[in-house]
Structure formats: structure tokens, C-alpha cells
Length: 254
Image 1: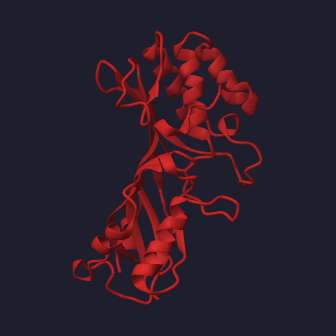
Image 2 (image 1 turned 120 degrees about the horizontal axis):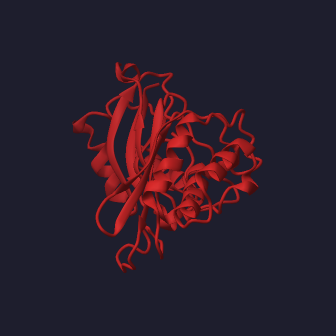
């Protein structure tokens, strides 16, 4: 049976994250599964590239599914158009790719990038898409601390407890604050994998450094402690975006 990758974006403000669960209604996965099944006229199971928490957004997200139809990736199928027509406005399909039968949107991802957005001046047009941070922030000091993340292997200090993951080891290859304009900044972080709540916990801790409540040495000690209670509060989810996922080209060679 043919396997497909579906590339999409979603605004997660009104959803309980990506992951479909019995006790968690109205997730992105649930809505997408139902609409794809309806359009294709067959029961579809869909697997995402990873979880996103309640309220978190994705500018670039991938999921895979199997279908009896063999032309869904072709423009002539109009599948992208048909899905976008029935999906709610918060979910948009970008493209559908034919992939190898064993390809996995979750396990074949080589690295992922997130962006966390903050603004320094109250803005009525950013309140639900960026975090308003009042007061002075030492962005340079926050970047110096963020650079230390590239040397860390175990991220238990920034992970949600009791997640039943096999390991809390991650390889971070990029972690920095970038100025967008006089009012807005984004924290960009790239890694081979992320733990639950990891980015939000890192951002919350870096903001403590920017406000002068922690120093670089304390941040390093927090990383080494492998104790979530030592790190700062998790930043709110509404300002976090999954921005990019990279896959090996070989899985698309079908």
C-alpha cells in the first residue's frame, strides 16, 4: 500500500496539541485524520513527526499515512485542494509526497527547529502569537548562556517529568536569540530530537538570566543538575512554533 508524507502548518491556539488521545478531544491529529478519511473514503491512520503541546503552533509539520490510492501526490488528484477546502482555517496542507513504504515522519527526521517569539512593547496584534516580556533583558547574556546548550548532552533539567522516554539525551546544534526588529526577538533552537516541554523550559530559564535573576554559572549548574525543579518556569505555549524538519532525500526516492 502506498505511503505518503503530508506537509502542513497549523495554528494550535484552539487545539489540545497534536497528539490524539482518548481523554483529550480536539487535537490536530484527530481533525486531520477525520478529514483525510472523509475525502479519501477510507479509514486512515496518521502518524505525526512529534508531539506539540496545547496551544503550540507549527509552521512546518509532517505526518505520514497509508492509502489504497496511488496518485495522491500528483497535482491531478487535487488532494491538497480538497483537504484544504474541508479543513478548519487553523490547519493548512502545503504538499503531499510519495515516500518509501517504510518511511516514518517521526523516526526518519534528522533534525528539527523551533522558534520562540517574544516582544518587548505591548502590542494588541501579538498577544496570542508572541510573549510580551516587560522590563529590561540582557539579550547578549542570554545568548552566552544559550551557547552552552551546544555542549550539553542530557536535557533532563528541561524535560517534563515521567514522560517514559528511553533517553533524555539530545544533540543541540543551534541555540540563539535573534533580533527581528526594535520590539521583537526570536529564540531559535535546532536539535536531533526534543523532550516534552524542553524548549519552553529552556526559554523560561534564559529569560531569568536576561532579567538578572540567574547568571551563566548558575545556568551551567542547572544543566548539569538533571533536575527539572532547578530550572525556571516553562514559558507559555502560545509563542512557540515548530519551524522546520529535515529528512534524508532517500526516503522520497520512490
